[in-house]
Length: 442
Image 1 (tube, rainbow, N blue to C red):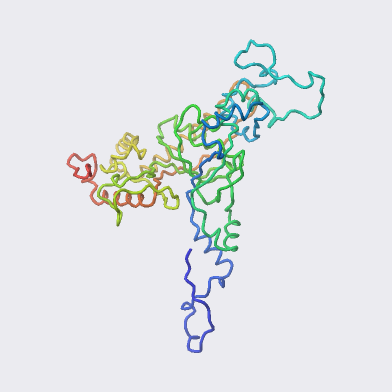
Image 2 (image 1 turned 180 degrees about the horizontal axis):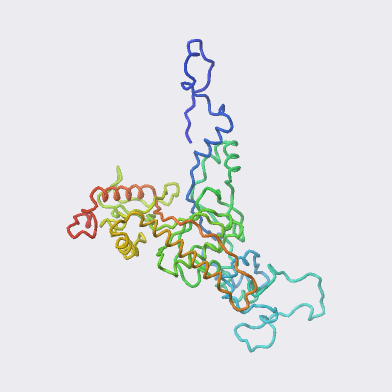
């Protein structure tokens, strides 16, 4: 925050009658309570994008697999972190071979008829020890043991369980954390801290759990990406204590409230973020926005194509608008903006409400919340064979639909919306007589 300061001096006799409102005292002379309020008001909530980065000598899954055979010649070199038990409801289906008792998995898993044990113990050679074998948790049917020799045969799974990485964010740190000792201490006392550890690295991201929004972008979904978290947002590398503290979460994907599969993925994420109070669903991501997405709307001084900016300081978010669906210019980008599935839902809503479209997005949000509650009831009601413990419930947050992106793209989108509402009949794609001149801006 920039504050213009007029240094204090003793009042002259002809100035003593002046109102106190005409004199600005130096900022350090404000009472501590006033200074604290200014520090906090000058630090707005942030969209904190958190990404995982591997260690320097293992940049990818391919690098990990190449070094796996030489780095892990002995199963004892694999360390199973205790926090993996928190994700057991996702990975236990892939590790069924290791269910108790321990002798049940001490054979070649590719040849079940082999009778000789793969691992012999020291007591078979006459050695005795009072030290028990390392166990990150007590194995149960719900949280089975992950045998090191079994994992050593499967580098694809070991990638998820044992890879070395850390979290970083390109979101700028609040400036007042580095302005002076007092401002830094005020923000730390308010809740700003270094957090988001991994199983192999300490915290590196400044975040306020009660104020900031943790933003996770989708990596796409395949059979391997959900081993630990069961969803496409790479949650499995976070530590459980950090996950449970997050209160505001933003995730990106195509969110159709009628899609049970999509609801299940989001519900799986909320099961891990058990304390979420507010969920922002990114319906439109203008990350790669191009000026031709918004024909007829140019930035002042714009020269040529927009430059892609990944500096999250320039990011913002706004609520979605009906113009995003109905304006014939904006509809051309609907596949990129994740709004194509709204056509049928909007038509049904318009029919039921006799043409009144006010409240449509609130209706979609409530429908999504209902779907999340129904999915939670379904999950809590399913008890697998042999399950010993009761599944812990989780909170269903309020759902808000948002559009996010760099501020220059957000401004262009808002101007397109304004243009639509100035003449909605002329720009509505459903109007056969609509002016289509800007459909071909090239």
